[in-house]
Image (tube, rainbow, N blue to C red; front, side, top):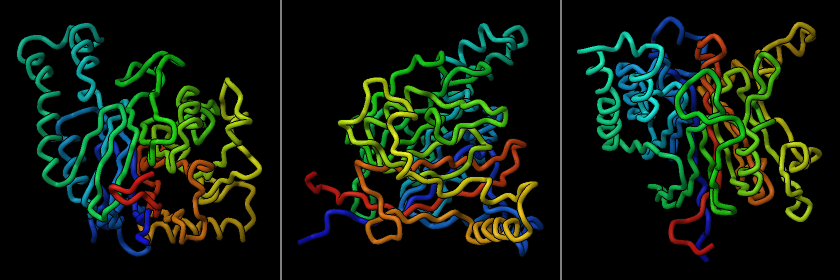
Length: 345
């Protein structure tokens, strides 16, 4: 009997903000390496970028980011926008040109060039298709993979309103239409409420509606970025659907006794109260990830921590930049089982 699943490797990054990986041979990439985000990034079946492709939405930043993504050693690259990618939110861009704080400066030739930028960026994205890059609008998408697997993803660039950026909505007023039981991977720019969404201020910046949608859909993986300081991985075990309340939130939907943090910055960066031994362990974990250029996790059926699909979700905050916009965080490399293309479910 043929196998119904195929082990698939996925590279996940987010929030690169126009910054390319370090070139091999540069001073910062010498031994020991000072960051994991270095050429060449690990080979995978799929590469995912969870948005904030740019910092200022300049054409040069889009060109740099898409040239980097095109060069990744993966047959398929899936990309969404983030709040910094203003030119990809055409309605926002045009409104900003007409009514934003810069509107009075955008006259004549300046306005003409400004209004052309979404088309320039669209051309960059169109050209990237020839290298397997697929830009995803909000919604559900199904793709066939070169390794014979089928992947269903839900994508959304939307985040709660903060600071007047693109792809935003008033807090609590967005419907994440994620199919229940029909999604392998959710790719969003922002985090769900309560899951790797804590800002340095101590506030949770995630969206409760997104959490509710994920709790109902229960994808194998939910990857995102947006909150740079909350990089990490958590394996969440859901409560039984029979025990789920009508008003779902992170306090009542998760079986916390069966859930665990796999990685976060606290486990990689020595703290003030760490013993010498504990500080060395943290630095050694970080050194190993820097050398491997990734944080690897195997949740396939043959791995050390097989995921129970429908009962568990692996959450990943994949932001590469830290809070100072230095690329000190680590890409994720995930092994997961995906259904064979054409297999009945």
